[in-house]
Amino acid sequence: MTPAARLQMAIEILEALETTGQPTDRFLKAWFRTRRFAGSGDRRAIAERVFSVQRHRARLAHRMDDERPRALVIAALLEERADVAALFTGGYGPAPLTDAERAAITAAPAPAPDWVRGEYPLWLEEELKRAFGDRLVEEMQALVGRAPTDLRVNRLKASGEDVLAALRGQGLAANPTPYAPNGIRIAGEAGHLSETPLFKSGAFEIQDEAAQIAVALCDARAGMRVLDLAAGAGGKSLGLAAAMENRGEIIACDVRAEALAELERRAARAGATIIKTLHLDQTQPSGPFDLVLLDSPCSGTGTWRRQPELRWRLTPARLAELTALQDRLLDQAAGLVGPGGRLVYATCSILPVENQDRVSAFLARQSGFSAMDLSQTWREEHPPGLAQDFRASPARTGTDGFYAAGLGRE
Picture 1 (spheres, rainbow, N blue to C red):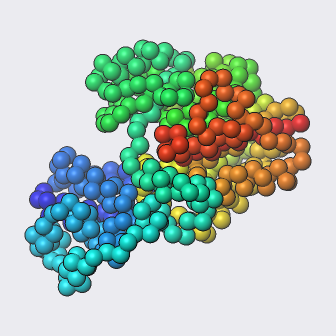
Picture 2 (picture 1 turned 60 degrees about the vertical axis):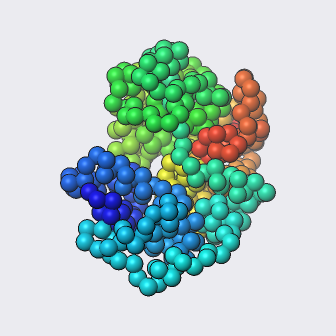
Picture 3 (picture 1 turned 135 degrees about the vertical axis):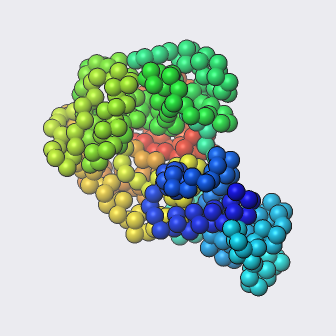
């Protein structure tokens, strides 16, 4: 494909992404599957263009005073000092520039406000200021770049030293994560890790360090009865099973059958035989449990480095739906915690309305619970952001944005 044809396809993909809720990476796989004429180099260049535009959408839209995909691509080319007119000539490439586009190209842009510099929706600004205060722009800019690849070594199958040595033997820049005891971070390109014999043997799972820290803060121990109430594909259930040395019981629940099927495949690979799955549309878990983990559905604002499209898809109405759901799930979880047990509430959100606010509202409703000090469960050097609760962000902890709070039952 010519450079111009690549640009046109990137524009078409960005337009199509505005009409779907699919994650960008999954959408791209399906898109290219039906367009075999795009070679591997073409696919890579187009995907990089699409992700880059999504990461810098506010800045690019500000430059052209236009947020349509075609304008965003033009703005990106201007930043690269490319000859835009030479690339927009029609044919297999983008149509020639309009008079309005030419005028926007030559116009001097106005100074960028904070929400443009930080690449976040303007309507979220007050909520984000609640989270970060004077550090808002710094924190938001840290959410723009690409995230590293973090792994969790599965102690049921392998040692950290052996996995590190194997990864380095593959030429990967692998090192222990700063805080999670079983974590490994790969800087730069990680390749297709899920296709390696090491992964297929169950030696590791791909999991951000913040999620690993949250699992460790659950303080799960051998012999416990544990409920993972919104388990998804089971990344945290697998971590809990390893922490419990595969002794005890973990009930992993979700409303999505396909996620539970994936969890079962992952558990078999990991040798985590104590995990049992439960489809919430068919039956409900039966307490009491020593530990209930509610890794709640949320806005995903903490994952914006990995899924940059999410920052522009979230709406006030959707956020209100999520907070109502979080309250319902917390109340459901509370009824399943045994006396003296604990409930750990977690989200991959950076928004106080989904985090501290939900915990405060829960404690006001549930008189039999009190806030726990999660820092007391951490036995090594404390990660930044860990106090009574855990608040992670790329700028603070070098991880995804994440929240966790412990709630003990009397």
